Structures are given as structure tokens and as C-alpha cells.
Image (tube, rainbow over all chains, first blue to last red):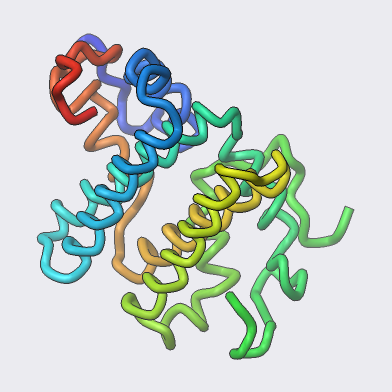
Amino acid sequence: MAENQLPDSEFSLDQLQPLIDQMYSRKDEERGVEGTFMWFMEEVGELSAALREGTPEELAAEFADVLAWLATIANISGVDLREAVYQKYGRGCPGCGNLACSCGPEEKP
Amino acid sequence: MAENQLPDSEFSLDQLQPLIDQMYSRKDEERGVEGTFMWFMEEVGELSAALREGTPEELAAEFADVLAWLATIANISGVDLREAVYQKYGRGCPGCGNLACSCGPEEKP
């Protein structure tokens, strides 16, 4: 195992933002939100392609890239992704309030 | 506290996929990847708008929505987001292998 590799079992998505911050914050600050959003969109396009015709490994890697660039934008913007998800979805569906959504099929989610 | 609300301190982003699965899997299966991707893109557009001119609360909510729809697509596709991020970024920058990226400025990240 490389010196800087975390064991798989100890890795949590809660570490995504600090990990990406440690890895790329120097470049992120130079690029800003607008430039970073363009990179993010490129990865979203690659995810779309992988969903159509990627191998399972390629597909997983594209999901990781989209998450990494989303984390970078959140870092630049000062948003805590864990807290943001908790506030919006931690109390159930934002539409009906239930843990298993019972909004009608015409509703957004 | 509502009956179905987790305490903030116990919520982890590792719970995002099972939470969204419990909340929306019935609708997700009916909609499929293509229809879900269109909803995801709508949320990406709303994130872009919030980055330009949203309040901090609106911005956090849009990040949460993008993550929720990304989790839904991952659920439908059988991808574990935690494992995907770990495989791609858990050993350092995919380009240079360092925890603090030292790739040249012309490099992708």
C-alpha cells in the first residue's frame, strides 16, 4: 500500500471535500468558480457517455470525477455537502416529508 | 424532532445512496436512466444559477439536489459512489499520485 493511501474500510464520502481540498485547492483558487464549472460540465458529459456505453469500471470512474469536481465547486463556494444534503433530505422527501416519498407521479421527484 | 429525522451528528454522506434509494427507488425504476439524467441536468442548471446569484441557503439546497439526483442515477446503475471515489482519488491525484497534486497547470485537474 502506498504511503499516502487510506485503507478502503476507513474511507468515507465525508472525507471527499477535505481530500479534494488537500489535492487541488491551490489550482482551484486560481481557476475560480466559472472555470471550475466548465471542468465539471465536461465530466458530466463524460458521465453521460459512460452511462450509454462505458464499462462498469469506466462508469464508476466518471461518477467519481463528477463528484470530485462538484466537491471542488462546493469548496470554492464554502458549502458543506454533508450539511446541505442533511438539511434538504435528512428529514424525508422535501415534497411530502415521508422517508419513502409518496408525492404523486406528476410531482418533481 | 420528527419521527423519521436522523440527528445531524449521525448523518454521513455514506448514507446518501441508501437514503435516496429508500425515498425514491419506486419512481426511479419507472423513470430509468435517461429520464433521470434529464432531471439531474435540470438541477445542474439550477446549481449554475444559484452559483451566480443565489443566497447561501439556496446554493446549499441546489448542491443537495444535484447530489441527490447523482445518487439516484448511481443507484439505478449499480455504482457505489463511496467505492468509486475511493478507487479514483483515495490513493492521491490520479495524474501524479500525490495527495497534494503536483501536475503541471496545463494538466487536467
